[in-house]
Image 1: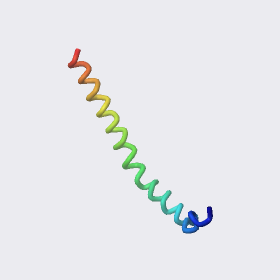
Image 2: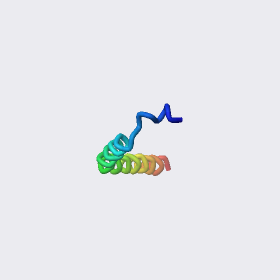
Image 3: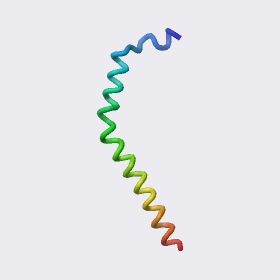
Image 4: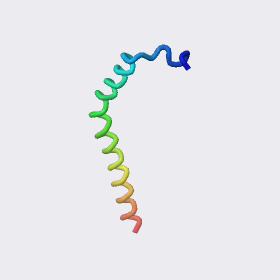
Length: 50
């Protein structure tokens, strides 16, 4: 198992986690907006369909 993870150190993991923390404030509202938009479109289509 050591051969697969030999290049991964705590510093490299912290770098990845820091990058995710920077992306989260942008990605989370965008994902929620897309979900809301899809739900809104589906609601309007169901209302128009009757």
